[in-house]
Image 1: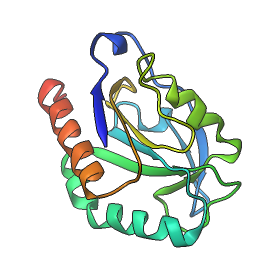
Image 2: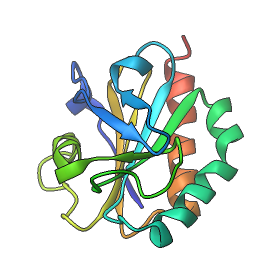
Image 3: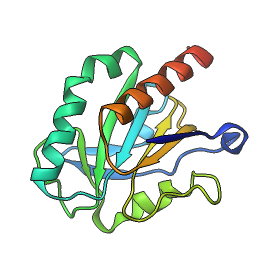
Image 4: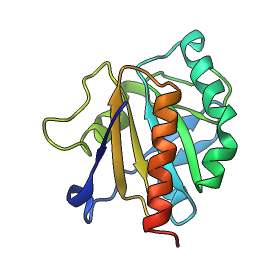
Amino acid sequence: MEWIELGDSRTGLVAPEFALRSGTGELITRSQHRQRCNVVLYFVPATTSETLAPLLDRLAEQRDRFGEASACVYVVSPSEQPAIPSPLLLADPGGAVRAQFRQVFPEGKEPDEGDTFAVVLDRYSAPWYAGRGDHLDEVAIDGALTKLWAIEYDCPE
């Protein structure tokens, strides 16, 4: 995954609000995390349980590492409803939230429609980093964790 520091483009920028249903039926919003934790959103084009299950397993294995970095992490799928009963999986019917988060990328760096991409938000909902790539793998997870530690270092409160 290629990561982009949003730098000056994030000044004053707040990530789009969202309200998405998790695989356990809970409504997850951006604002519920404000001042509580950093947030990593992985947007994937996958909608089937066969494709999503390994991704969710990888993230679940890293739960402690994300917790140490004061972060909540989610996989956002363009499905009508979550394919797996996981609290980490969010359904984005129609891809409206995905489209909004593509706009945090600098012009000319936006991910393509079929790309997997990630956005790392600080606890005040400001996007600090954005990454794009072909798929969600260990390198993409480690990259997000590295970015989270940079946020914690720069903004520890």
